[in-house]
Image (cartoon, rainbow, N blue to C red):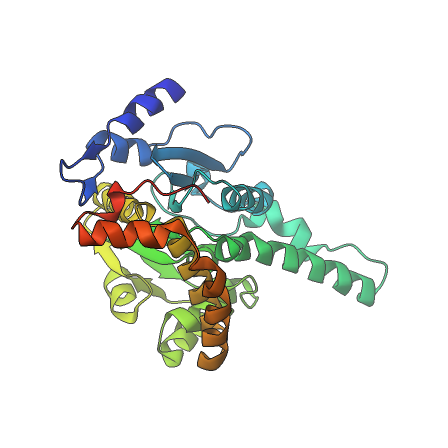
Length: 314
């Protein structure tokens, strides 16, 4: 219950010199639990396992976290709220139950996809395009959120799951994780982000084409070697501990610096070097005028961790 979660959150163990900190096992187990999803979301469970960290858990374990109609709108509401929350500096995303996600819930979504409304071809197409762009926003909102998003994948990550994780900033997985661009197996081209983002994540265009055209499974070792994930853990508990520790490292830095870094990394990915440098100069001509720079420089001269600095909320 909520009182137990508060106690667990308070049990985060900080090392005495504060140069780094490790989440307690109680917090990790709480993050990996399958407790009831609180209001206002029916498909997501939101918690705050440590200061400035928000944990978003895909929470339909009985349905293998399949993405039903409610999920597509709740993700947008959730990340829009996180984007404007000054208490949050970093997000961890994971899945409840035995796997990360089985992808789209075909039974729940069939009517939207297979029976779009409209009096003729033009109107049917118009309405279907609106549906597709609405679903695209479900994952684009993660990328648009200025707070860095660390996603932790265990077990299967199928179809829409790949769309989701490629919109995140840092991807981690367990040794038993596997990934599948499943859409060609159900008769359609992936249309909510995988075909656009996966080529930017994995350096090999040939490998991207192979995965998207054959729908074969990619396992953890190949995901690591290809760059889809940056770290592989033995099991979910170890992964969640690693994700929380990494999130703590990010949260301990200046939010002006961290959020500016994410925004400029995303911008530079989609623009030329010259355009990226110009955008960066325009960005920092204002963002350098922050007390965070002087505070961080002072801490560095005193050989103190950035985590010892009390940065203002952003």
